[in-house]
Image 1 (cartoon, one colour):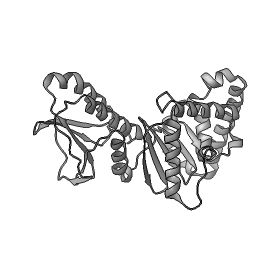
Image 2 (spheres, helix red, strand yellow):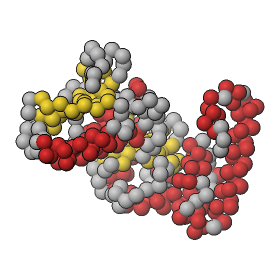
Image 3 (cartoon, helix red, strand yellow):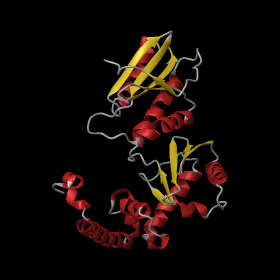
Image 4 (cartoon, one colour):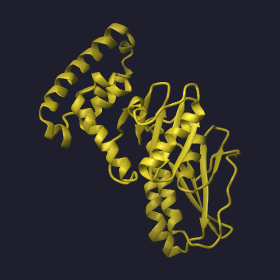
Length: 295
């Protein structure tokens, strides 16, 4: 659509009348498309008219009641979730699906005014269903659960559960605990450093790679990291290979959960092929440095 990239810059959309008009037009159009899609169940199952069931996910994110969701489309999404869980979180799942928290509460009972206990109840449900180790982390009204390479985010305030929402923006204040959690999912630890310009860096060490190992095993992974971050440096220090990543996305890109999640996965892959000699020390969470590293 022409000019679509300018919508978010249009201040007039903050006007309730104009904003309501735009929302009404979109929802009306999508509701019509949704009915058309569900009439052909094969198409709705294999290739829905809205890519990645985005309209369903929008309705769920808006807090729509289950009874107001497109029923067959929702059933397909739920079956995909159940298959994903039963596979031990190993098979493919829909792109960034969202689910009402009420769906999960149909499988267990939360205790009233017992958030810590309910956190453990949800974690136990995932462990029992996937038969995998589940890593959990809670902050304010959000729970994070890591299963394999996947991550469930439970938003208690909104009653929303998201699976691998890689497009979600990460707030600077949530970066340190979230990244630490993602690394611990893969048995890794690293230093998080912060300079005086409020830029974060991740520093992690592996046993020293020789030139051939580095070229074949590490260099391709570093190239992949460069897709998410504007600064990646490798040093050889005390017989270790040290990787330093500036957690600052390239220009015109926001910090997304997907970039952090993929970074943790890449570093875990490097750890798997690292020479087995010296053990890595667990580092403190925050160190101040005085200036941004230069190339």
